[in-house]
Length: 378
Image 1 (tube, rainbow, N blue to C red):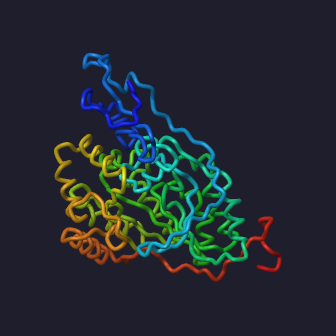
Image 2 (tube, one colour):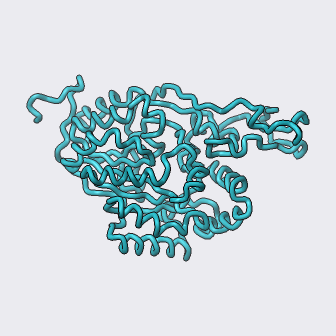
């Protein structure tokens, strides 16, 4: 039974989490967002007993839904000193991959949703993204710098196979000779090798693939609807053989969980042909400080407190630190050791430590107002 309240829940009855460990989903709860005036709590009303069927078998399946996003602009700008790009494009809001650690989860609360299950089941698609991008690139005041695609949520999540919004965006960038960084954990990017290869020949693109773990069991729990880790390595190999500059992102590094895989992941990615790699320490902004410990206690109850303690050791005894100087790399002795281990693993494997490639901004050709390239701009 669900109850609605604008105040804190009383001590009795205790809220009961009935969404734990839903198959194919990352989050194990769906608490109301921090901007909501009312909160919803799951309460055991006495009808459910251990003798009955499980809650999952008597509850309707949580299915993925999507709707149009009506944003009027598509390029997001940032001034973050610890990010190697100043603008990005995100074709989707929310992400069906369901990665429980995703730092973008709290952004779903801006839309009146939960950062939990809502983030991975209630998606928004920017169907007119290509047209909006073309219009912004055509503005006289626009100055070309590389655009990062799919930074907040994965541009190649399952919905992209149907809608092809990312493909349309890439086509605009390809036609205007505009440089782009892509990051994904999906093999669907192989569909666009034709465009990426053509852009790579002009030094206009690089691709980063995230590989968090090589353990299939852990991956299914951490990233339930993302491409399997070994399939991602195959994607890196295909992209590299096509002449597309590739990097591996070992992100996030979760202390005492996937931390011991640093060397193996770097070695596997290097064998797949990547030229560089980088690692980011687990970030737990806002609702993730509840969601991630919930996930740990559900899937790794015997190790949960140890992992939480290890996370705090990287964040000055907190679960999160948003300071630009440390949010990506952590702080303290353990953070230093992780950075040194990663750098040494990259050195042994013959790849660089770095988050960007030099892309060429000089070839950019602004589109005209009708989306056609000028006859005299070739």
